[in-house]
Image (tube, rainbow, N blue to C red):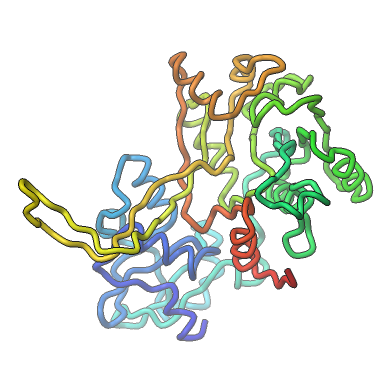
Amino acid sequence: MDKERMQEFLAKLPLSVVEAMAMIDSHAHDAGLVFIVDEINRLVGCITDGDIRRWILKGGEVNAPAEKVMYKTPIYLSERDAANAKAVLIKESITAVPIVDDDNKIVDIALSREVSNIKNRKKRLKGVPVVIMAGGKGTRLYPYTKILPKPLIPIGDTPIVERIIDCYVEYGIDKYYMTVNYKKGMLRSYFNDLAPNYGIKFVEEDKPLGTGGSIKLIEDKFDRPLFVTNCDALIRADYSDIYEHHIKCGNDITMVVALKNITVPYGVVNSGENGELLSMEEKPTLSYFINTGMYIINPETIDLIPDATMFHMTHLVEKVMKQGGKVGTYPISEDSFLDMGEFEEMKRMEQKLNIISDK
């Protein structure tokens, strides 16, 4: 790895958890980690996206010092053992291993995706159903949606819904349900012509039923938790880990949530009694977790959806909670959630996917 590229995987303290997430998003998304070094590039720790997720799920603050999350004894190799990088990456099931000199300074980084013949080790989810909610009109994307249904709007040269399905196909999933309404004939025709090596059952709404109501129209009975997802957002995450998290936590519903950072474009003041100025902060960043529209739900929750009624997934979440069920979250980073609900977000999605567009 060249020196300039290597620097993108290195971070120095002090650093916050949210800053570490941003670094992983910006430069090291495929590896899912950054290495922490001191002022002369000596290895002192490592932070992975999994470390950050576990911290958040324990109730940790995203603005906390990254040192609280950092793993202080990461796996590494000496320059003399660099030739063993491939074997170590496979044995330890890790995405990257730093190469250090005699002073423990990082001189190179071996990435699993750049070492030839290391196979994709994604855990299989074959047999897990996926419901794609594709019945909306996509009014925010007018006039595109005057011609095409929102799921068929292309990102690059591939419709967004096909890109979404491809993400699941990587995990061996071959069974899909698509709830449709607006311009449903075009969706059917597209996939008939595509003739994919997976199966899609189209579930037709006679009237709009919301993001949850249409699920009740599915006649098949499910014997395991299923994914439910919108048709206009890509989630770049480990789907098998999300699924395992849902089962391990004993959730009835797991909602995938993404970090959203909002910068206040003004100096913020904090005042006390009688307007006394206590402190000032220039253009602070506020961090929230937002609903991505991707869920895992247990089959029993479908019975709580009323028949032939406008009913959204958020209504189902509220109903499960009200009845004492367990609803959990699975946090992902800001750039792991790519939404195309508006034109500016479409451009951002194309940039993140390295797609050149003429739009």
